[in-house]
Length: 235
Picture 1: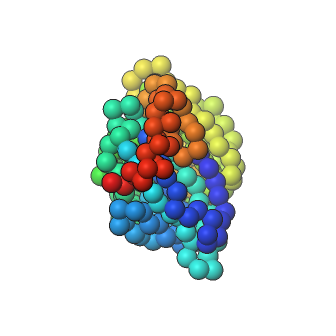
Picture 2: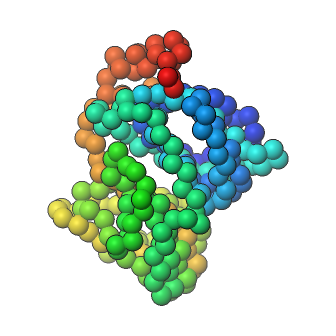
């Protein structure tokens, strides 16, 4: 995952293949555009879920005068999906399912939280939720035990998991994988807490990454560059 602060002109049109990008806007307004005619604007709290698949050219550009602070996660696609059709999903914060508990709210961008599920389409099972907790409140998040994942603390301080590991603003906390079946993670706020959870099923295939391309072999990376320079992305 990458954390960026950037202004207009930083990420002009560029290619991707073989992965998904999941962009969360913390601050600022971000315009995205692609060579298939897609166009949209993300505001703070919104998410864009882009499936590059067989190839896409896109730009991510703050609106004039804006400085965008964002997080971007790359999701590796399995070999059977690396050349799938490109797809965009703009996930507006206000439209996403919300689970409410005493002193806590969980916004579900992908996957589910205690039965509250998003309709986001996934090629790889991924849970992405945003947790808001008042001081002293606790909330439990369920996950399949096979998932990898991590928390990213956006604001405040809290305790995470059975060991009550301390987490503070801008810190990443990695999850331990459960032995089998499903697992639950308890998060408790020691101050007003806002945190993102990213978790997903490991693909367990060879990975070769070069620049904006994520494939299984070096030969596939070379083919991606050849196709890009031949103008085949987005066609």
